[in-house]
Amino acid sequence: MRHEPMEREAMKPAGYRRDDAAGTHPALDTPAYASTRLRAPKRPLVLLPHRLTEVTGPLLGAERVGPTDHDLTVQHGGEPLGERIVVTGRVLDGDGRPVRGALVEVWQANACGRYRHDGDRHDAPLDPNFTGLGRCLTDDAGRYRFVTVKPGAYPWKNHQNAWRPAHIHFSVFGWAFTQRLITQMYFPGDPLFEFDPILGSVPERARDRLVARFDLATTEPEWALGYQWDIVLRGREATPPGADDDESNEGGR
Amino acid sequence: MSGAPSGPTPSQTVGPFFAIALPWPDGQAVVPEGTPGAVVIGGRVLDGAGEPVPDALVETWQADPDGRFAHPDDPRGPNPAGTGFRGFGRAPTDADGRWSVRTVKPGPLPAEDGGTEAPHLDVSVFARGLLHRVVTRIYFPDEAEANAADPVLASIDDEHARATLVAAAQAPGRLRFDIHLQGPDETLFFDL
Image 1: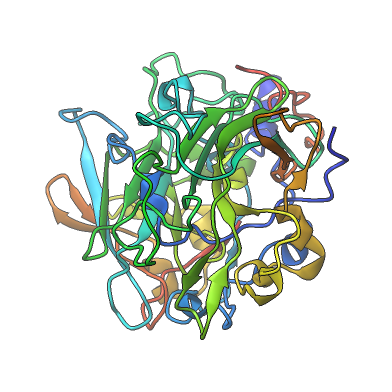
Image 2: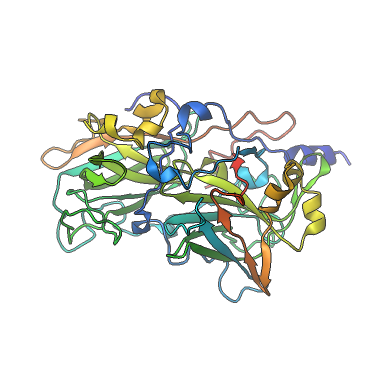
């Protein structure tokens, strides 16, 4: 009898914070990015309280990651052309806690700004030694690390003389469906930033969160430049009174 | 090494070239072929002109048939009957905008105040032109009673919009769920 109310309480798990959504993420309806016109939903979104399906999520493990997936420069017979770089950082939740064992997937253009994809019509050479696909799991400090080449800028058809700043696409699973994030990482000081409607779709004060930091300590002498970029997922709301103390984002794996 | 994080990382579009990395050979198989009770759920992703979206990625997340999650934040603990149910599906659309996953119907879920959530899948849709994923839910057409008592469906006043969340029976073992990003039949999307 005594544990029945406890159990009910537990069925209302602590959700994930919605604070800051308007100041962080792009508006779906961003006319300067032409592809939004027929694709961004027009109706107001309906609030979804976080229940069991939203506070849990796929925990995809080592079986998703191959032995050379973290190093995009060793996946073929020879080395890809371009500026060799190390890109590393931590996946954290909104309270600064490391998200451990999280699957991070990346994809990018080659050094010439060409993707290995049939849909890419940019007249720049493909590199037989570069696919542009990477995967890894975060370690106990929430850290990921990739070796790759710096992607090139490339033109697109969004508007007259449109060019994307160099970027690497990141897909991250946190611990919960609510934390799932797909985004892009940019390189510091790119002169194309101010002309790019995709980076420009992010509220101004949050834009620099998408820009990696050059780091001499990460740079490997005689070998590769180093960049640091942390990814911050949503944080958890306070555990409701009566429910068990929640260490679950930190443990379990 | 790096300073204190300045806030949550903003979302960006998945873009047109994610097929380099994100589709998995077994992505659509939430359960292996031949699983008893397996159902194929799928449909098309359509834009505001009614045209197929050939470069979308649909991801699904759900409980197992007992209504349990293989996850430490399921307060009921691990399912004793669980056998490593993945619960996650990932399906890119084809040239006609078609996607599908093979799964089993999840069980109902306990909700607050003694309520019950009807069996459902949470769904994310990513695509070029979507600067942030859009999130919806798939409910089951043969669960009319449970759907009527579901707290999420009950929170939606617009009957037409609510109906966009219920899949249609297409054939035995096959459910259809089209995702309309815009237009008169625009799918109901959630603020997560």
